[in-house]
Image 1 (cartoon, rainbow, N blue to C red):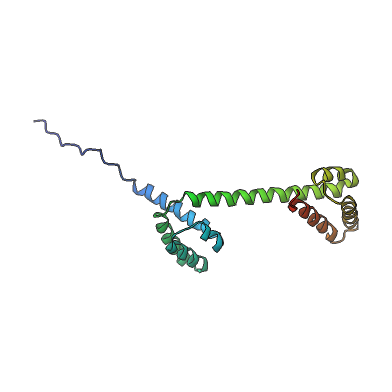
Image 2 (image 1 turned 90 degrees about the horizontal axis):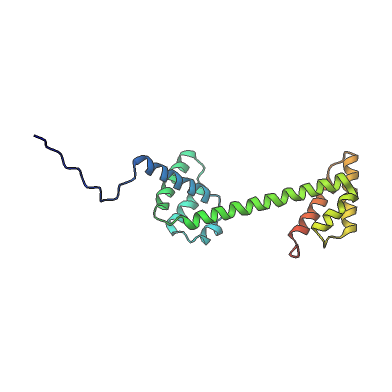
Length: 174
């Protein structure tokens, strides 16, 4: 006799494996960890449910490692109920803004260092980048920074030069 046990029909959608569920929960906990770095105003702008907002505020206050870990578990559980697309977009936008800010900061540092190294020769490049800059004030700051550097004094004028360049960069006309 050839008897076969009938196979269950696979018409139903398969449940994710336990490992997959754990990976998904870990991803949501990481998302919650990222949300902890947001300010209260930024969290409110995301229009999160009130229970999630309260859980995040509580987690920000907790200092004990074990308690924070349990709170993140809870936040991960709450995040399962929420569409995480806007949250991910907000995190990505913040990270992109931070990277842009850092890149601009490094460019200003490089320009300042070039001005100090080359003096008036690099002034044309600085004026090309910042056409509204006061040329004489810029030259004065560069000379003071170079003198300080040669005399091995604290970099007060170098910092003033950097501040002036940053003000030019943040000006609305830039």
